[in-house]
Each structure stands twice: as C-alpha cells, then as structure tokens.
Length: 270
Ligand code: DGL
Image (cartoon, rainbow, N blue to C red; front, side, top):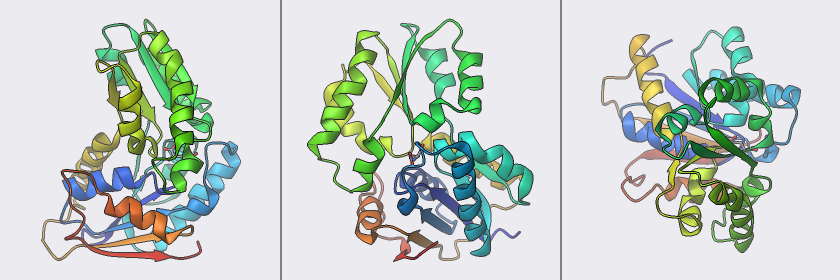
C-alpha cells in the first residue's frame, strides 16, 4: 500500500457523504473513492448475513479500484460486519458507531436518545458499547424506520420526513433527554428539520468528525498519509440515481465548498 492511493469510503447509499465531506475537509491532500450502494438501501432492515455480503462486495470493489484504507461510512455495516472485514482483508478499516459514549458521559439529565436503524440497534457491537457506558443513564432507543428511503429520494423537504421525525423524537423529549445521538450516517442531513422539532438545549451529536480524525490518525500511524499536494482526485460512484448523489455531494455544507474539488460522479453497476 502506498500513500498516493485513495481513501475508499462506502455506505448503503448517499448518507455516507456526510462522512466523506468530513474526510475531504480534514485531509485535503488525499484522493478518495466513494461507493453509494443505493440499489441495496436500506441495509438497516436486512439480516446480518445479507449486510455482510453487501459489505464484502463493496470492500472488494474498493480494493480493486486501489483503496489504501476503507472507511465503512455506515453504522449498520460497521456494527454488523467490521470484525469480519478486519479479519479478512489486508487493509485497514475505519468504522462508524453511534456516539453513545460521549453522550452518556456529558449528559446532565442522565437521559440520552439514540436514533438509528434496526440493524444497528440490534447488533451485538452496539449493545455491548451501550451496556458499557450507560449503566446509570436512561437511554431512549428509537428505530428510524422509513427515514433512509426518503433521504435516498433526495428530497429533504418531504413532509413525510417531518411527520416521522415528530413521531420518533416525541418520546425522547418526554424522557427529558439532553443529548440526541444520530446513529446513522444519513441522519445528519435531517439536522435542520430536527432542530425545528427539538427544544434548543438538546445537543445533537453524530460521529462524522470523529471518523475523519480516526482515519487521519490511522493513516499517519501506518505511514500511509499523503503529504504531497499532488492534485487529489475524487471518484464517486452510485448504482442508484446519479442526480441524487450529485445533489448530496454539491450541498457540501455552509462552511465547506466542494466546487474546487476535482471530482468525477458516475453511475455504475457494482
Ligand atoms: N447509512 C446507514 C447507517 O449509518 C444505513 C442506513 C440503511 O441503509 O439502513 O446506518
């Protein structure tokens, strides 16, 4: 493996672009390859074996395209498959898990909410972490049924999203949570809607920035970090709708600008 090779990133669809943006912002000299497996979204309702098979497919595609490290930008995929991937492929993997630990440690009300997919909330990895850090904390776990397919349509103003979020967030507000953990990489795109539905004191946390920092740390420790400004390139592939991936990539966030990046966004079967 060489430092000039790309950082590979995959998700069940466009949600992992929320992580990709953090990586590109923190590591501007790195080239990246992003796989949006939108055809198979949502992963959250699939069983462990199905999720694992999809992760293997995505991993082998990224390795074939020359990835030097793989960021599994999907909580559902990480919590169900990362141990297998790490044991099977000779390449480092970074995963994303719900930020339950910082939420539990910082909660003053001793009450936190977690919104995630069924696949994440049922996984052993998530339940082991939650058991370790939330012994003296009330945790309101809610499955975000239906949110990912709506986000995958690329319409973040769909009234159905507001309807579902109201339903999912109400029990958390009733339980007086002061931290809401977003346990799915699609959900950061719903923060503006959530903000309108939650009392202002509730902090919303996701793991995107922490994943980018961990990627940087691992690349440095393995001497795989790119130090030359060699004109980084970004290849973004979707097996779903090209327009939807393009929409999420171009809406890069207020403080971040994707316009100057050298990007190729393509539709391809994988
Ligand atoms: N973005 C994913 C996650 O972080 C998965 C959503 C899904 O495909 O169900 O969990």
